[in-house]
Image (cartoon, rainbow, N blue to C red; front, side):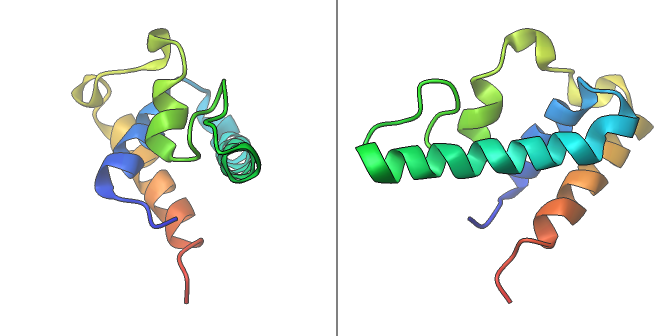
Length: 95
């Protein structure tokens, strides 16, 4: 999976719904859910009932809307979450 800017933005907003100290664990949880959803799709040819098709967008948008924080609402914290998500995904790019 190659993340796009929209994926990184959604992941950052997803992180904002969690305490900053838990962001690393939350990204690990996201990786697990994405992999499980992709495996489910590969095995059944159907989207995962809770986590979608294995894309970041499907996973984040499958969560309750209360998890979303408008991007500009928290300024520096949002930028920190964006940088954290971008770094996390950059470590998973093919070499």
